[in-house]
Length: 178
Image 1 (spheres, helix red, strand yellow):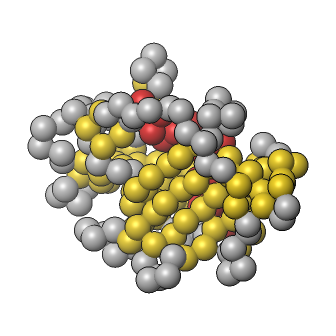
Image 2 (cartoon, helix red, strand yellow):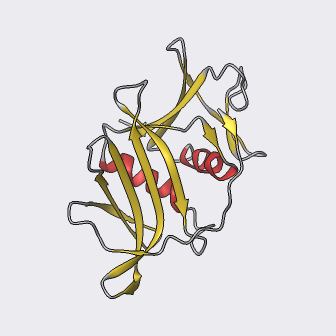
């Protein structure tokens, strides 16, 4: 995986609740919904602030876009995570990931191959939940538990570099503990 930087300033606006969306729970005072995109291969999730509404529209605090993984049949890759700047620092993203994984116990999330500091921090925090399993899979198929680097606030492997590894030999996944 590679490290990247991205702009933190985002406004996600107001949206209506999609008719075919599924309510998966509440976290940090926000309502979390998910659904399938039109082609059925992509999943989206969003956290809405129902206290902040305008004419039937709710303020979107976070959006998460997932696509069916090309390499792993049962996995979905995280393509985009956006948190409205008014909600940044609330720790919403790992909690939304967790809600989604708990609501969809067969779901396997795969981290993107490039991650911003915020993305690395999301996975670091996700690994703190006892009911979520975060692990690395080597390209030879071997599974490795991940550690957390508390100084860098990111995941790490005991025996190898996880980030900025030129061979890109590890993929990172998360699923609900069984």
